[in-house]
Amino acid sequence: MTKAEHRGSAWGKLILFGEHAVVYGHPAMAAAVDLRTVVCLRSRPGPVSLAGGGEPDSALSEVLHRILPRGGATVEIRSQLPVGRGMGSSAALSVALVRAAAAREGEALDAHEVYARSLALEAVFHGNPSGVDNTVAAGGGAVLFSRSRSVEPQRVALTPLPLVILDSGSSGNTRALVEGVRARRPAIDPLLARMGTLAEQAAKRADRPSDWGPLLDENHRLLIQIGVSTERLDALVAFARRHGSPGAKLSGAGGGGVVMALAPPEGTGPLVQRARREGILASSVRVPAHGIPSHALPRGASGTGAPSG
Ligand code: PMV
Image 1 (cartoon, rainbow, N blue to C red):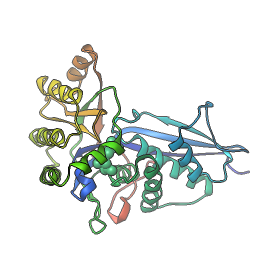
Image 2: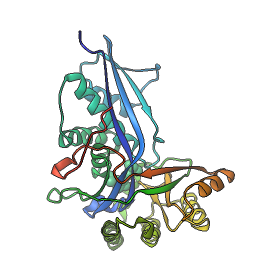
Image 3: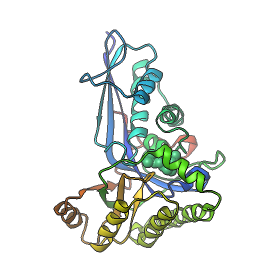
Image 4: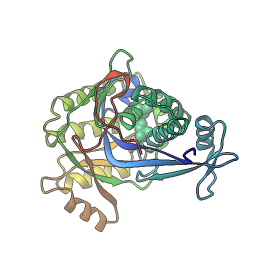
């Protein structure tokens, strides 16, 4: 009897350094976080539908049509990731869908193929993504990523990194923000180059991420200067810094989304509690050193394990 249910899963991510700069070929550092999206495909005759009966928006509808062109399934999507907050929810969904559909077809995909197929889906959501989100969603762990075809993603061996996430409560429009940055070039090119340098410097200090404070602060200031931060994000960065975080920045495209703050020396708990008392949506996430099993990195770099659902 054929199996009627197939699953795929993928991790969310944070861009630690270099968002936007990565679009123009500079390096960025990103890491998987211990929050994930799981897709479950249940075979059923007829067109594709969402479990629970919701209507997919036009982008999701297009993505589902591409991944399941012959229909015949109900799609259940369960995610621990906040949607549209710069934590890689769409890349995680793309990767989880690719894995679930491959499982359904009995196909064994390597990480490169998962990456390539998921990037085509991510393009439906975001236009022309750099690929950093999908590299981490498909490969897990932490990477120094460059868009250049000749530079393979380099795995970064991070010391476990506890972070506090402060959510602005609103979403940015990645496509519009990327276009806004493009329109400000070439005047802002030196700022983008500097962000790439910060990513490289941080990678060299991956054994002591608690020392990243000044690098994160500078990266946030640069993001303000290229026009992608908001008053709310700046206030959240200032809040984290006032309450003991050694450094903080927005993460992702900006315009909303989240701020990531290094945990104060006493840990994430007090900062999260304090933020919640002030009505800020706050949580802690871990960027585990080796805690998240991962596929081999796309495009040939090395890795271990697999987060298939
Ligand atoms: O907000 P997110 O998670 O979609 O991240 C976007 C990251 C950018 O560097 C702004 C765009 C990209 O394609 O890398």
